[in-house]
Image 1 (cartoon, rainbow, N blue to C red):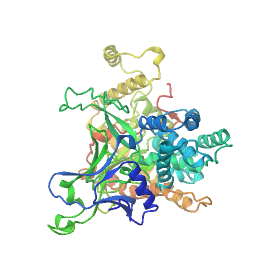
Image 2: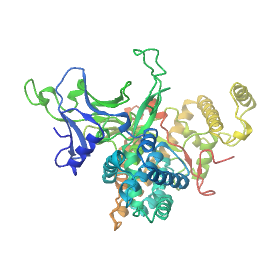
Image 3: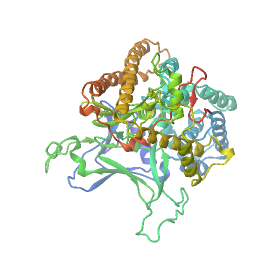
Length: 566
């Protein structure tokens, strides 16, 4: 049975490409269009017990991480093509001034795009040419991948959004990557370098590569102390064939065919793993979850044709809405809990507590201006509950005018902290401002907040909580109006070059969120015992806290954590 359905564009070419990549698949697996998610992987389960079924097997060297892609290019490219690739890598890394795993993969794909599709006369021949033809097939998939993230959005819309909705580190990073001049500089530099032998590359093609790579990469585990690409992959972490090494790294990896599988934490019925012996990446269907999309009777009884179900994996156990949207281009709204973080404290114009004072106080006690919300979705995708994640959340202390802001604590507390610090490894003077120094400063701030909270009377604690919720209600009212106005303006933008306005998906979700959040304020102020007023603890999300951006725009253009010296 063919892997790709007939209505998939270029299905015959894709079949040849999968075969050339040596990807093996279960005969009951099919890739086809879905009504809501573009393209997905489907399977007809035949087992109802707890056994797992292998659906896909992708050879180690048919996946692309920073190690395999380098080795493949070293082995398969002719000298002239290697020079082109090396120069493309140099241009990208020099202009972008960084080299994350995702950016390295993007740079390689830009270089391979030039070699596979832009070179007028190809240098590679024979087996090496066949590998380039295979890569051309994969590059073609990346270039045709439709992603709902921001890389194809109208750039004026993104600039206006960034000005209207300040303080979100995730969106700021993503939008800045799109609207900065760096990709235009990459386009110009590559075209000037190769104008004689190559067709011109367009900045829209570069942004498409960025969009596709960032949306398709997965985190694939790799054993510690195991060679990454060599023919002799010694299992140094094992004493015998039966013993295993549970320590592993995670590689950001493009995995052909597996990247057709969609994400859904609630509907998840499959997982991927690495074969410890062959290093193949394997997708397994979990038969004990066969009822996720229907009962056994619906799936077909004994002797009956089984019902086809879509296969879902989890891209991330803890679904952060901004992160998922910025990288994968969708907002997860399946049943269950997601998290969203909004920059609120210090971003509330015309408040009784002005933004500068709020930001200064937050920085003094090393608390974040961001407020984390747990958002509960119903089966229908509608928001049914919103709660504040107030575990380790002490930002409400900024409403206490009685604190000695920017003053030294009493001598006993200072002496205690000094004694604690002597037991820790202190950063050297030249390391001031380093990650270690910042971590130590924020740990001190956290300890101070704990002490301050423990000293509060119940009455004073409730007063500060009410002040915080009054501030939150004031912010949400203004935020909701701003969202509505900006969404209306965005819909009226002209898109002469086929740009998208995917940011509208986020704005529409913001509108739904604001309506749901009103319940929080009603619960806190009118019905103190209402379940919505109870603190919601989800420790798994704490490690995903967004980088705080303090709002000092009245005196500076914006100060990020670590840039400010008091």
